[in-house]
Length: 120
Length: 112
Image (cartoon, rainbow over all chains, first blue to last red; front, side, top):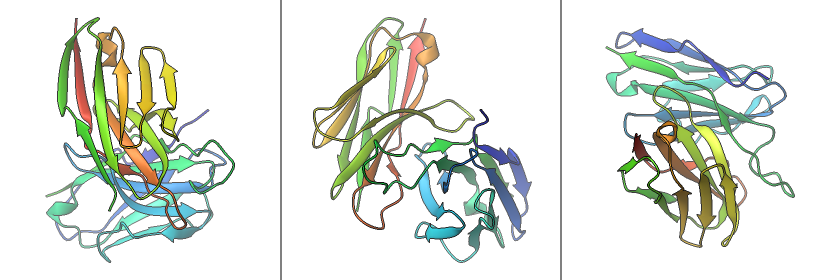
């Protein structure tokens, strides 16, 4: 079956511009996560959706970052007034349920290929 | 604050030379520890989840083990195709905890 897909694969923008990054999770997965990965670092958590709602957005660095998942499937990460420090690979992951499901072996997060964002 | 430290940062092995990667963690209650493999320009690929000290899991040439403070990823007789960055991540137990906290990874190079 199809894995997590992300578009675009690369995005180059100018400082101050607005960008949208899209994530298509694995069909049927209710949990969706966004992470950001800088060069030489591990992924850093941004936001978690369970269904349509953002259950945890504690990782969003500031109010320039916003994400939506209106129908509980596709998600869009939106960045306003981009800064050079926003340059990174933005990763999306999905899992069948949230990591708090009890009585299961645990919910693995399956990652997409990422969107490489470059802010000039 | 959850912390994950991976060592070494980089490791070069000759093909067939077995070794281990280390992941030390500090977390207030471990829900699960995850190992991922990441190839250049790609997203992390899931390898293992470990839940309790003493647990072991194997997949081909890889075996992951877990203690109360660290996890090891043992690579037996590696091949060049095992070259990648290996990431370790922890999930903290407790209500309201959803995120994985990752280490910086170990970059493994296997030389033919």
